[in-house]
Image (cartoon, rainbow, N blue to C red; front, side, top):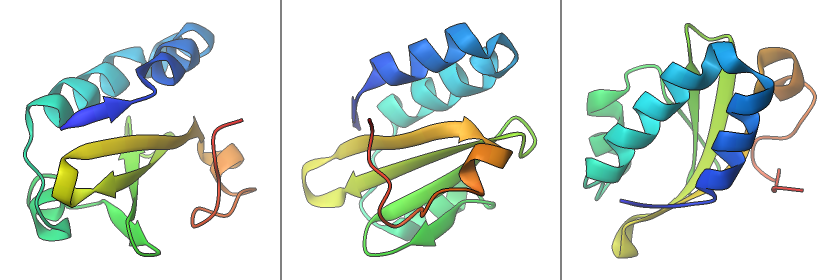
Length: 100
């Protein structure tokens, strides 16, 4: 998959170094993946949640952090929409949040 906004992940990792290994591991796996359907994601990430039409919420580092992406399955692109702590996640709408 092609990941849009990797810089956002790296910037978050700079502020939250404890999340770095888990986020970069997710990124590495996602780049190598071929997700054609939500079931493809669920097969690898059992705790992933699906919200709205194309959004996926990943629990990162034992649920301490959340990553929200929008997946364009047909063209193989993943758009990062949000990365934050669980507390920050609780204050946003996962279906509508966009990068600032």
